[in-house]
Amino acid sequence: MKKFILAIESSCDDSSIAIIDKNTLKCQFHKKISQELDHGVYGGVVPELAARLHSEALPKILQQCKEYFNELCAVAVTNEPGLSVALISGISMAKTLASILNLPLIAINHLKGHIYSLFLEEKIVLDMGILLVSGGHTMVLYLKNDRSLELLASTHDDSFGESFDKVAKMMNLGYPGGVIIENLAKNAKLKNVCFNTPLKHSKGLAYSFSGLKNAVRLEILKHGELDEAMKAELAYGFENAACDHIMDKLEKIFSLYKFKHFGVVGGASANLNLRSRLQTLCEKYDTFLKLAPLQYCCDNALMIARAAVDAYENEEFVSIEEEILSPKNKNFSRI
Ligand code: KG4
Ligand code: ZN
Image (cartoon, rainbow, N blue to C red):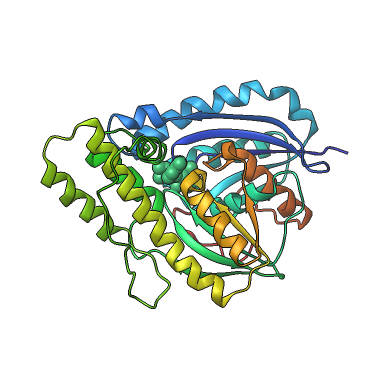
């Protein structure tokens, strides 16, 4: 029996292909070509450039895993949410492969993929709270026993990861800003710059990062030319306020929902400051904290392949003729 599923991810600025053994959940092949340096020049992702680079990178990666083609039982692809012109590269390739190899096609929601990064080699844990922090999304979710997802909190404006990107751009530090700001903040000798925690006095659970971003912008203007020490101090102040905001609302959510398990996923879940605060919160509430391996927090095709294993078991196939491309987050009410 053929047992490998090939998955393609191209929703934003990473071209990635993975092959997973659906019976053992072992990764057979995984390769990702990141476009970060190409977009870095522009301080953010340029959709047309992303599309061109995907169309160059994906065929190169596919060449390297041809030896597995005879053992494939399905082809999976990220179909939403993301940049249309980027998604379409992966979808076209997946449809072509499924058609030529006569295999079923599986469409995977990117955010569902991120959740599966918690369970790359194991069965999914049901009934858990999830914090999803990426470049495009900031959400707290309740994954229930019946696999349905309840949205407990989301952001009014910028996402957590995006706010790191924008603050890095304001200081001309490059893209993506998450790791850059985190590393810079670690070097801060002086810690005198403090920003207010957004929505601290609001009883609601929603997030908002645009006010904080603006406060950082005004602080930068106040200082004029920034030296390295000042950049580090600003990065430290910003990162702390952004993490304070995430934790402030989570503390409220934890007191309402007594989670036995809590997972954190998405590119920004690699942030160590955030991880250590989450560990402390989970210890306080006697909750088991589940983290994705650091190398699979950011976009990758292995998480899509892992999600596709469960979709394959449930025979969640789509037809090759079907229009599956959706830049919006349409199918995210259950996983
Ligand atoms: O999940 P991901 O690869 O792409 C999306 O689905 O959006 O997340 C990328 C985002 C970027 O905004 C990046 O700056 C942020 O995750 N990020 C971080 C860190 N590493 C990546 N943000 C904060 N701290 C980090 N260490
Ligand atoms: Zn992502």
